[in-house]
Length: 419
Ligand code: HAM
Image (cartoon, rainbow, N blue to C red; front, top):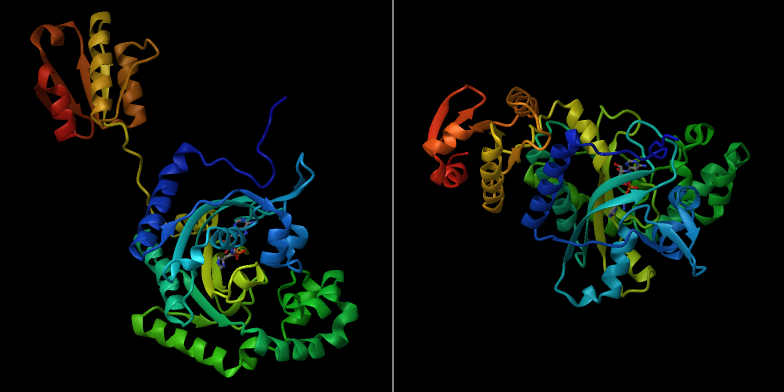
């Protein structure tokens, strides 16, 4: 029996890991620079949390959750995203009493039972952040700038920012009525889900993925044309702030986002290169979520970026992440006596923070050199009986063949300072 990875899951192989390390390290560094602190939340929560948090009329909750009963008879779901869990933690840990805004970032796996496509997986990774307690559009512009700084530091040249506003419950109420008026004559031609969304949450009919529904939804009235005065002012405020710091954007009235908690600002960073799954990152404001999940009324905003999609985009833009250089020197072994000295030196080097490798497979000298070359180790030192007698070794830089002679007694220090 040969096993293969489950549909929708994939291994991240050592050849890719430098890119992942760089992205993780950069995201964390950029978030810290803006005052965000990392939070780690559990992989699973009680199912009800996502039904209430993400919304039980969304595709994510209705169709895509990995839900099971645990041995104690509880309904558990693997997190399909991070916001609901972070909000649960914010409330449960009393973070509402901390000075505002409370800024949190995360690096998580998420799980959605979706049809596989390029850039769409069943287990995937998200870098995300959430900020609680800031009402005005300054924070909206700030979290967008976190992403711009991140993309910039990762060497991405172009990713398009699209923004929209989907209003608040006040403007949504009047808008829902006009949506129902629009959809009513088409209802018979629409899918079963849309029929059930019609009364409960007609906004969800706009992002239905069924082709016939998509055609009908294309001409539906846009929320941005129905904003109340406060929401209009908030959106104008965001545009003004983005203009002020020089972040370019387009207004896309079709962004409604697939999760129920959003209010006012919504945005996406999209690419032309990642195929139909071109949204690399999505987010927005959720001013009613904390209260609806049992906390006090605190405004919130955040985003999540699909890391696999980010990697596809970075590769298609030709970003070079370089190679790992953890191992600096290979200690080639010419005799049994030398092997004891080499093992001691290697241990000391590693204690002092210098990466090195030694032969563990009884290779011939030639085979050891071939191995070091193939592994791309930048320096090689050969140690045999002659070197032990002289108390000197020669360190060769593989890129240009130049050598340096060093006393064995000084070898570890030399490697620490010079390699
Ligand atoms: P979302 O738009 O559902 O938002 O997901 C965010 C990003 O995760 C997407 O733009 C996409 O890049 C990636 N993504 C989603 N599903 C998949 C998948 N099946 N395979 C690969 N990548 C995927 C959220 O999750 C919200 N929690 C974002 C947020 C945070 N809003 C406010 N705070």
